[in-house]
Structures are given as C-alpha cells and as structure tokens.
Amino acid sequence: SLYGFAKQTQMAVPTAVGTLLLGFGLLASRPDRGPMRLLASEGAGGTLVRRLIPMIVLGIPLLTILRLAGQAAGLYGTATGAWLFASATISLFVPIVWRAAWSIEHADAEKRVLAKELKRLSERDPLTGLYNRRRLHEEIVRQLATLHRHLRPFGLLVIDLDRFKQVNDTAGHAAGDALLVEVAHALKRQLRSTDYVARVGGDEFVVLLPDVKAGTVEAVTEKLLRSLREIHIPFGAVTLTPCASIGGVTCLPPGDEAWTPDSVLHAADLELYTAKAAGRDGSSLRSLACAI
Image (tube, rainbow, N blue to C red; front, side, top):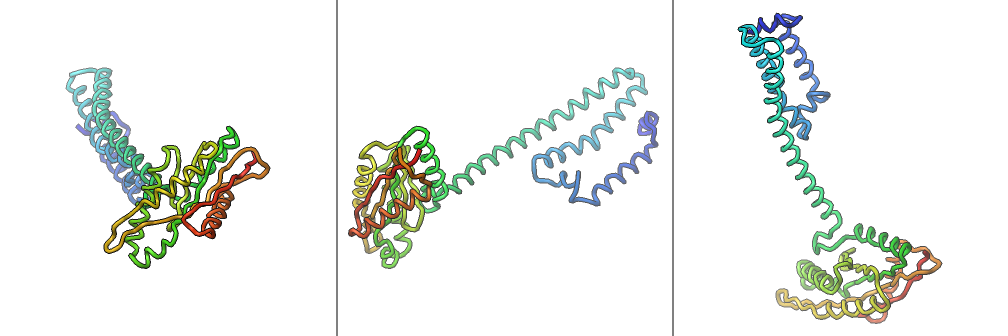
C-alpha cells in the first residue's frame, strides 16, 4: 500500500504527493525555460522526454508499491525485492528507449534527406536544373587550386544567346523558358561527365572544362555552336531556333598573373563582347597564363 511505501521513506505520502505537485506547478509556471521547454520541444529530446514521463510518474511508483507489498507478504526478502525491482524497471525502460531511439533515427534520416535536397536546390537553377553562379564560383576555385598544384589547365566558356529578348517579346516568356531549357539540355549532351555547365543570368550560360589539352576548348566551342544551331522547337505558330556567341579562355601554367574566379570570368566576358562585335553566332578565344 502507499502507507507501506511510506514506512520506507522519511516523508509521509500526502507530504510527498504535495511536494511533487508543488514541483510540477513550479515547472509549469515557466513553460519557456528548463524542463518544460524541453518537454514541449518538437525535437528528438522532447520526444524522448515525453515518452519517459509516464514511466517515471506511474511506472516506478507502481513497481515500488508492488515490491514492498511482496516483501510485506513474505514472498521474498529485501535483496530479492531489489533485484526484481531493478529487473522490472529495466524491462519497462528498454522498449520505451528503443522506440524513442528509432523515432530519433527516423527523424534524423528525414533531416539528412531534407538537408541534401536543400543543398541541391541552393546550387541549382530552378528553371534548367543547371548549376547556378554560386556553385560555379566554387568549381572555378577548385580548378584554380588544381592548376596551381598539379599544373592541369582548364577552360571556361561564356555563352550568350543572341537576340534572346526578341523571343520573349514576340513569342512570350513561356517560349523563352522552353528555349532556355532546350539549350541547357543541348549543352549537357555535348559535354563530358566531368564538365560543369551553369546558368548565370537570363540567357547566359557558363561551361567549365577541367583538365583540358591543346585544342580541347576550341573543339568544344565549335561543337556547342553546332548543337545550338540544330535546335528547332515548334511553339505555337513559330519555330524557335537559337544562335549564340561564345567567349572563352584557357587557363594555362605558368605565368606571372594571379587569377581569381571573378577575373577569369571577366576575361571570358571580354572575349564574348569581341565575338558579338564580330557579327554574333561565333566565338572568340584566348589563353591566360596563370601564376603558380
């Protein structure tokens, strides 16, 4: 009985119950702090605490009463009672903790999947699925580091669709979007799995070509221009056929100038302006000697 339990303690049962209620009341009065904040949390800690509370509040006192009742009835001695109490407590706790652990693992797995998806979204262009400017910048940093350490040249091409604004003005933005998506697919089909292609502006793309050999950048440039000229997209009453200008650089060791991602992109942009000034639907390329 409760009073049998009380004989084993230094506090009367009503006093103990009152003390517990007072403690719970004090905790509940500050729900934004300490244990109550954890209890209300939607995180893994809150889940575990909420599952353990019934065991702590009801399970342990009930087991204590049963243990003392058994001892009082002469069914077992103090040592055996203590062993039974410990065994029963473990038997109750293990399934609860096990379920909580699985819940936490499931929640963590969902968070990992979500974090991976968020990372993907943070580095991709939402329309074309290509890399965005941020991810491109990271890759150029890596290629410059590889150039300095292992003397491996790389190429960078800036591609701008000629007269793309006319497509939007005459056929509408939906047609422009369809054309951009098809251009993205065409570029990817012509590149190696180790190459990178990004959309960095409305109708501007950048291709990064790691570990190139002599003539690689020139050959890839011509291949990309041909693939873009072959695009024909029926859209309503019109057929969309893009053409593009390409400015590119090949970064080679050794040299005296220290290049950065921004300065490499700027150099390729200058070549793009040269290509457009020469009549569009063409290319202009140069080499950069990079300090190592």
